Length: 101
Image (tube, rainbow, N blue to C red; front, top):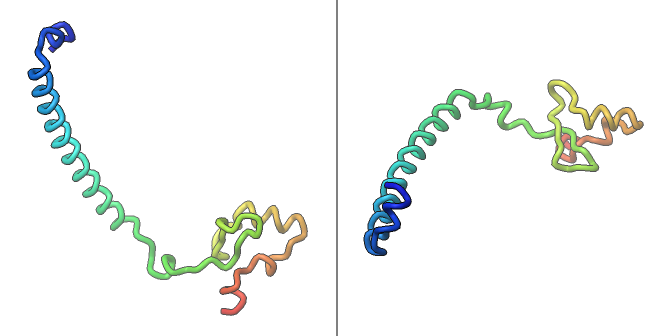
């Protein structure tokens, strides 16, 4: 329908059309959400971390930004390298759990 045709419709006709469009959109969106959920489940299965990786606790924490952590494996994060350059020792960055365990 063109905007000109819609202009000639009564309020009741427009409301009925609106309800039909909303119902169609809702069905389509639900279908797309189901497809996305199925893809997400498949991807989670493909990229699931190994058990010991999933349970690996961070051994080092950035004192300036506690959200930045490092397990001590792999390449050193930039924040670790930058702090070491300023004279901070690696032992000073250890978490409490890493020090006691």
